[in-house]
Image (cartoon, rainbow, N blue to C red):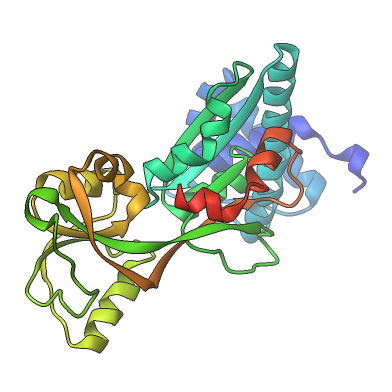
Length: 300
């Protein structure tokens, strides 16, 4: 079939059914009857010459062809949603920037990164957090403009992404000033038996830290492992334990003297990346953030 023969109305109905996995739910969302939705999809299948769904019980399962068509429909309608959002913002003199960040990334780091935009009345920010794979899916569907992460993404021709290095920061050992104000420890040599809080197993740093301790024959006393950096900050502040983290996580507590740096490891580095799609709509404000000097960005 030729492009002009493709009915995008049929494709839209297919997209909603594929996303919801049920004809009845899709019909309710589209404010039409189940039979009308079914007829639209059947016509699309006839045009394409292949089945898009296989029924399993009460649910519809995508065929291999259905999976392929869905991947393209996601891009088509994701771009359409992005277009409408951009046009609405432009007519109102507004620039919208949608930023996703992995849950293990410091909230302080994120705020430092977007800080140049906070005083601009023409900018509307959408900030989301989650697991990397979910954020990348939303990025590929054009529901996010950029994803901030502390790990790179592997090259995949089926999922083209640009991964830009923003900077890095050495990992620090921090503790309450009331106990550690005039003391220092080597990382990891002096951590054997010390009460310690660590980033959780999903954090990019955790495997590095565990390997470093194992190679030195050191066994700290693990008291907490925390994926969310906002929670790790509270643990560092209120527990009295030593905590291993990037200093940006507790920058305010270090500034006020509530916490002090007890030791540092130049071996362990948290790296920061901005992930975008290669064909995204150019947003000037985002371009300015991406070209900022990495060293100043990561160390702030």
